[in-house]
Image (cartoon, rainbow, N blue to C red; front, top):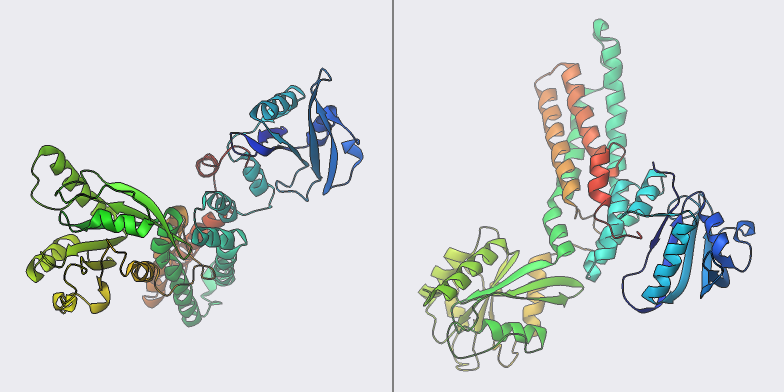
Length: 458
């Protein structure tokens, strides 16, 4: 690990009331003392706050500041850390930063503070990744999942699974040591049951990835339908603002329009699309093509149809061609205000559940709040985002997939009386893959890929 003392601005670029500069390393307190006009920082205990002035190496006053002192190991990185809170002028921040570099600190790389926290045992790798997710969270749901992981949710669960496997692998290794004596220390029946239990827990974690990834990045929700069905009017009604141009002229929307909507703490990425029909010109054709691409990428589809102009046959034909197997969707029977006597339920049949079709007047915001609640329900279901363990990281999912395959091999090996050394190999590989999640087994390439995506100063 690089032992240089590192420094970076920890607050976002731009003007603000306050800015924070963070220093970490064995020389951090000594370097800050060279600039600080106040108490001698080297004589102060950790977890203390001090008012004073910062001067450059020429003695020129830069700003009045508050300096926080953290001593190893009781700091974010596990090293001596100084945090300087100054006024949020970009000029002041850059002047203090440059002075600290002149005094001996080195500019930090992206994620280097959190990397040091990981290397010094303050966080495991899954918790370090949760720090980045917490910073990037755009909704309460994403925040709750990241916070749960930061508190050790995934870490603790993986650790429990690993400990159970380790107990049995140690007995199997013992059998290998006494191979010539043909003894069994590990009860194969108990081992098989244990592997099945662990496999079930891994598959449950793995099954949560689709939802977790969607919540982390925002649930892609495509609004589709024929021209003049009211898609753009619906987008405006959901956002409660005039975001999309609404016109009686068919084909007004030529390209996709994307906006964010927060429903019960979950971020939905709404995408208004061009009407699906035989295109009248090349530009509209490109719009329809993009619509189909967005539908293929969507997590949830809202299909809007005009209850006056659309027949039941047309509706079902459209749905059959657009909806992917297993994809959550809602069907909006729009323009009910034009003929409220129409029985929208006549559009349902065995393939279209009543709960999935919603009568609506997007123009008059009729049933918009109900639509939002149903949208949340079909996307999230009954899972509790704030308390359930949910996997959001593709790296974790990949490791869990590999571990599940290893356990399947081990279970099959027990059932077919596989040789002990081959059985042990499958279980060791499962342990290896689980250890990759927490970072107990890792390499520089993985670390560089993970921490290189962090912001500077974190």
